[in-house]
Length: 114
Length: 115
Image (cartoon, rainbow over all chains, first blue to last red; front, top):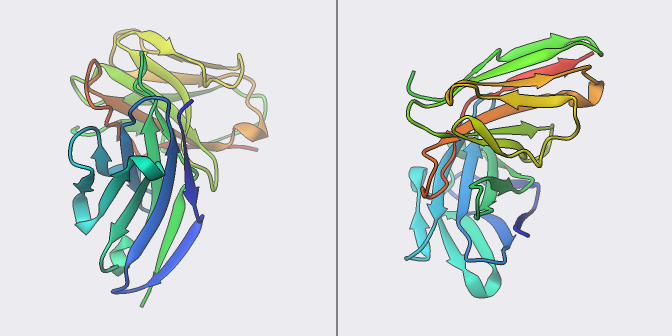
């Protein structure tokens, strides 16, 4: 069965520092992987997705993630954090088959310190 | 509107009452999903519609929860005999359906509080 594990429920970085949010997945089939961001009192917004092809995917707001099959990982990175990046980030894997439902991780709350 | 619309945005009710939450998906999206998000947790799948039919309702926690999508557009999530443990944010999402890449577009959610 598909699942995702996000290591670190809370991550704090300084403004301008590297952001690294970890996600490992479990999937019996080639996965489709997603990162969503949720700002306070807002809905989830897609940051980026991996389906097939290039393993390094770029998303909005300067974020990118690399699909590493050998490590079953899809970590999210950004070279330089901005105060506006403070939010909750969710990794998700698509279940596939007859349903396209996404299975979400428990989320990582990113704090950015001035 | 252009996005997924959910009403009400906030609902406070008493234990034992009946609640309906509405979702209006993006026009043209045939797939519709309901998720539940409790504090400190990721969204938890409840039910998936492809058109008018529930293609996967494996996430509904018990028979107090029911959802409909009679015309293949707007959906209503219905909760009977609400319990305090039902308090959560209920999220609706839609997608193109079919063989799309699975990107879901989410509404802002309906926050349900059961007193």
